[in-house]
Structures are given as C-alpha cells and as structure tokens.
Length: 222
Image (cartoon, rainbow, N blue to C red; front, side):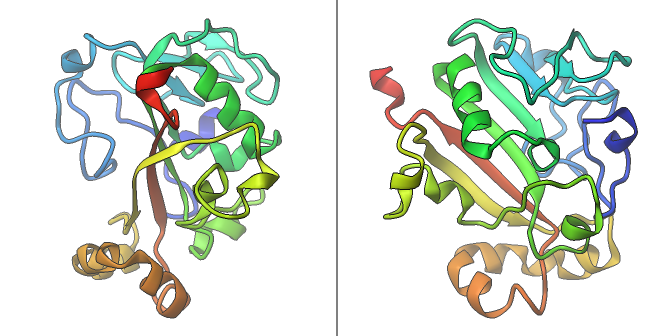
C-alpha cells in the first residue's frame, strides 16, 4: 500500500494503526482493543501493506521503504520473503483491495506463511460503501460472503487449491464518517443476521467496512 494511503481514506477511515504505545479501538474496533503493544510480543506478527502506520510489535512489509516498513517487497510478487508457517497472526488492514494479484493467490500465500493455528485479520471496504468504488486504486471489492468462495459454499470449486476456515466476520460502521456515527448503534443488530441485512438493507444503509478472521481449514491437522 502506498504510504499516503495509510491516513484517512475515502471511506473516512484510518487505514492503519496509530504509531503509539496503545492501539486506538476507535479506529480498529475488532483488531485491537486499547491493548499495550507489548502484549503482542509473545507472538510473531506480520503487518502486510503496513505503510508508515505499522501494528506495534509486528514485522511490516510494503512496497516502499518508509518509517515502520521492515521488509520492502512487491506484494503482487510471489513468494513473499518469509518462511513457511512463520507467523502467529497476519494483519491485512485495507490492503487487499489495492493489490493486482488474484485474491485466491494472495490468500494462498498468506496461508503458506501462517502457523497452523494462526489467524489472518482482515479489514476491507464494504462493496456498497462510498469509498469502495470512489477510490481509483481499488482493484477488488468485498461483501460479507466473499471468503465463502474458499471452501465454504457450493461455488468453491472455482478455487480448489485455496480453502479457509472463517473464524469471524462482521460489518463495522466506522465512526470517522457521519453516517457511520449515526448508524453505529445498529451495528450489533445488523450482525445478528448479516444475510438479511445484505439482501434487504445494505443498499439503503450501506456499511463502510468488513472485518474477517480466517484460518487454515483444519488448523489442528496442519
């Protein structure tokens, strides 16, 4: 991700973690909860497309050498410069939508470097949000069902080599936008039945952000 994109994006969101001792849950309601950065040191973490706002304690990889980037690498080129099963947690915070490489190839590579019981934490714009199509650097678009196509629905035969277990998924109304602030109270209700919301209300009250946690399909067997 380009360095300048790690500030306020067209969704009115902060696309990265604040460079501070504590991680601000206003910006990352799922990934982080005002937890001291030191608490992450017991696990090995990778921040993919970190820009200059890297997750504290993580190894940062990005296209450009800016403050916070530890490894410079083109994320559209495979393999990534890391060993198999190296990381406990991988953060992909508003980066997947910017990459040219096919999503299945990216996920396959992230699974390669993820430990058997590790987790990939992903935030992306919701396809119906204002910023999803407004940003000309976005190459991919996501709904709450996107990762079902990796081993979780009947169309998964299109991606036979990439399967994931969806540990968690939810809609997030970011409070950086007025609409997000107004609709934040209904976020809990929407996530009680995301399918109903997606089919009947998402076009009327579009959510800004999607959050996923994915793992190997059979983590104990890896």
